Structures are given as structure tokens and as C-alpha cells.
Length: 246
Image (cartoon, rainbow, N blue to C red; front, side):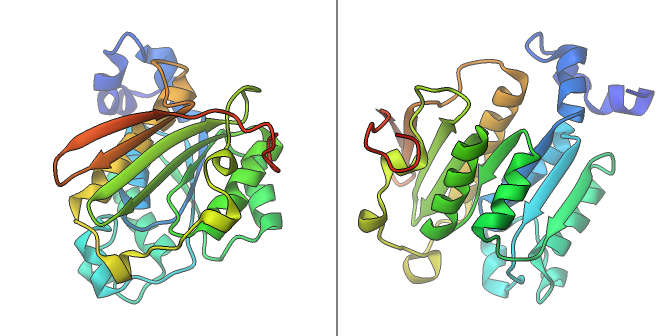
């Protein structure tokens, strides 16, 4: 680390759980974020600010005016641009030390397999079950931690699935194909700060796993009702009949 980096990350380095060695570990880490929308925005911004060495950001959509109510990595000037290019510009301005790799395509299972294999942690900030199931399958195959988040209306949920731990459940242990109703923000709405709350937790859990500190949300589903600002934690168990990890 040079002097500028020591100053930039000084508040991390002051934490005994992080320190100089921990920050060095972050600078050498590679994280995949799937989705540059309401969840991916705060995840990417906090991980870039934290000094992750390389962020691989994937999204095939373009910025629309209705996105800007909650997708804070984009600006009005970004309307019509590819989300990954808009996000890269914001993240590079926030921290030019971080390498940003963009994927402007819908990741099929083969592409996900290639990308997941090369990273340390995967963050699911997508908005559909097909992507979530495919990303989970790739993470289980390559034994990569998966930080999962979802929001709708004023509700949110976060969980950490540790495919690198043999007793950890996976995303398919929680949701089955047949009981996965699709709900979208475009149909149901979403309170603007709620993706920021959930995305910030996803970023926190990512740092904890990369640094091997604290107690990650492994085997737990954290549920938020922002209308009452109440949190609920539900224990998750590995499904021995799970077609992915069982």
C-alpha cells in the first residue's frame, strides 16, 4: 500500500478485526456482483470504497428514468446507457484503485460457471429466480460463498450461503422451482431506501467473509419489514433432498 491508500483505508486499518493485513487481503480480492440495480448499486459502491481489488459487475439492462429512485450508482445523465458502463464510471470516480470488469450480457449457466470459478465471493443482486437459481448452482459447484438479497415493496431479505462449508444450506434449500412466484418492483413498487438497507448488509457480509471476521449470516435468513422497522431472523437448514447441494 502506498501513502494515499494508507490514508484512504485508514478507518479500516484502525479496526483490530481488519488492520493492515486485512486491508491488503481486500485489495487482493475479486468479487462478482450480478445485477446493477437497486441492490447492486449500494453493494458495488461500498465494496469499491472498501478497496476490493477487482469488481466484476454483470447486467444486460440499460438505465431508465424510473430506476433512479433507488439505483444510486446511476445518474440522470446515465439514462439510456448500459448499466454496467454507467456503474463503472461512478465506481471509478469513487475509487480509481479498484479494477472494474464489466459484463454487458445475460449470463447463461456456462458463462456463470466461468465467472464464478475465478472470484472469491459472489453477490446476488439480481431480480429474477432464473438468475438466482443459476448463480446458486454455479456457487455450489465451485464452492464459492453466495451473498443473497431481495427486496419488494418495503420488505427485504438477506442470507449467506456457504457452499465452501459442507453443512451449509444453499439457495435451492430455501426456494424450490415450483414455489417461486415472480414479483417485480415495476408491478408492486419499492420504497427507495430499502434496497440500500439490504444492499449495505450484503456488502457488509461480503467483507466479513473475505476477511474471515465476525459471524456471517450463514444458515440464517434475515427478514426486514421497513414499515414497522422490525427484523426477524429465521434459521435455515440443509435439505438432504436438495437437487443442487443435497
